Length: 183
Image 1 (cartoon, rainbow, N blue to C red):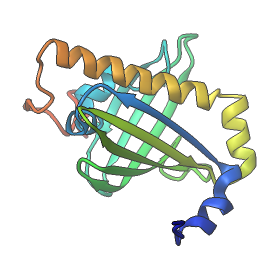
Image 2 (cartoon, rainbow, N blue to C red):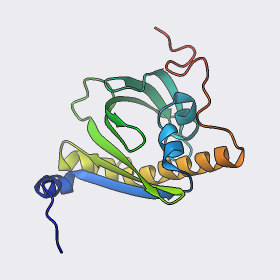
Image 3 (tube, rainbow, N blue to C red):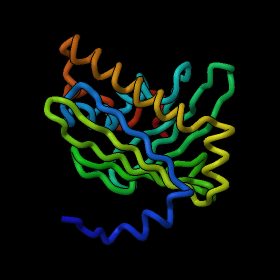
Image 4 (cartoon, one colour):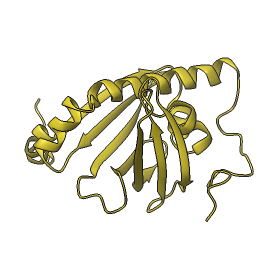
C-alpha cells in the first residue's frame, strides 16, 4: 500500500537546492547525538579531512549560537556561524549555518539520528537559498565530499571514544563557553 506524505511537494520544491548525506555510525544514537552537543567533542571531529576548528563561542540550545573558524589545510581560515533552530534529543537537530549572523546566503541543515540496532544512521539534509548557491557549494567548496569526510571524522571519533571507554556524558566545568571565549 502506498502512503502519501504532506511534505512531498515541499521536498520536490527544494530538490535542486539541497544536499543529502548519510552514514551509519557504529554507536548508539544517544552517543552520536551527544558528539554534536558539546564543543569539546565538536572540536575533535568537525570539518573535512585536514581541517581544524577554533571555537569563539558555543551555546547548544534553541536560539543559541556556535561562532567558530575552520582552518583549512592550505592555511585558509573560514569564518563560520551556526544557530540552533530545533533540538530534539536524541533524534534531530535543525540549524542555520552561514559565515555570520547576518549572512544572506546562510543555509539550513537538519540532522536526523535514526537508531539502527546498536548503530546510528545519521542523515544530514542541507537546503540552500538558491540552486546557484547549492551548485557553488558543491563545485567550489566540494560540499558533498566535505560532508562525507565530516561524518567519517565523526564516526572515527565516536569509535575512539567507545574503544577507550571514555564516556560522552562526562561533564566538565566549561561546557557552554570554551576557555578564552568568554565575552
